[in-house]
Length: 591
Image 1 (spheres, rainbow, N blue to C red):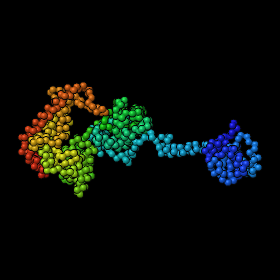
Image 2: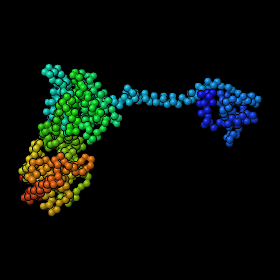
Image 3: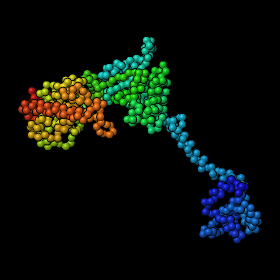
Image 4: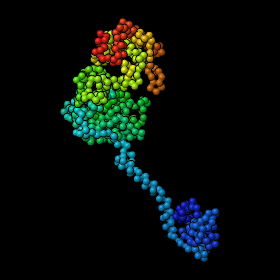
């Protein structure tokens, strides 16, 4: 078998599955019987055709293949004797055919793979089929065409604007600050609740300084492949350094900058590698780099300490919810190109929207404009702002209507809140009472603070508890029984009373101590021991003290309801008739 050619071996392997394969002895007998018409000889391989259909092993064959013994000198003479047409092929041609037959599938597979690889490379970018995964997804904005925002477009946030104006000065005139040894701050961290204008401030810095502005979200660094985020960080900073000066804005940086090694908050190797690369890039700037990183987050408490150290994020700028004056300025910006009716008072709207962010105020103006459009009005009136406020804070009007009995109960409940509010010394003034069901609320009593409050005294908290208990007390006094309508009031009152005892030191029994009462584990959902070491006895004492505060609040509310019963009944009748009473009517009715 040593003399078996490679071509014959390949053909032999192919022929093993050939249905026309016959044994050599059968072939020899058929030649001897004169049934073979022609043969093709290629080494030891033989293929040929019969003169007519021949039945071999239960099969009707018109052609055949077989393999001859290594040496058979009698075959060719027999073929010539039986006048069989003989064709002899060069064995080297067989070798070429065999090689092609064996290698062709592999060549086809390699060609298809190469085609797909080149197609993916063109789609993802240069540097290999997966290079596009590490390409930065930051959006570069052309300052001259796309970033028109300036500090004048940002209403309120005076302190934040003042801090960022210095960054603008660094970028526009770096030599002026370097003259006295100052250096450009590497990073500025904008901290504040959602919707307070952090992104707007970053765009204003770019618009004022006239430098390229790259914007990306922290979540866009993270992928399922480890190392992709780090590659995107390198690509982003490499692109930014090509400019004489530039700004990189990373929104929601807590998605990638969470503290390492905590095991909480979705920590993984990819996020930590990305954070490590970000730390390296911010620490590795050359002295001539004018790349300022501005990042925004509403969760500064979860950020890694290495990210917050000086040299990386040198400045922390707090962007808080706007105060009264700032809210009025923000409203003025949003209504600038909108037609307003004569009865719209921006001062009153700003006063009635404490806690609203800039985004909330923008949404309020937009909802008011949509409401005026639905009414078919030519201008936005005060009633449109009122409806917009109710829709945002309370929800849409309910389709289901209250029956007469339920409506009367809701009127009594809300009148209880209103009467206790009006006749409590430290309560915030009444603004509006309504018994129109909206969202999850069947009625609402709205108060207007005289000014923005940042701290509250114990008497003021007690007055708030009295107001919350006013609805419960009114139902019990007027109707003789309470309903499920007081659930939210009791929930909020219990929360305030517990905080007074455990957090604010307003309990004589427990004193000036802070207790992290009933902390819930993020994953196990069970009460855990707190840092202050609260025992079961302490928790029981907190709950007992909170209950006693609520009992006193209910007693105070009940006393006001009993003393002002005539005013309460008058208010109930007015609510059943008009459903909504504004501040002027409330003052007239209650005195």
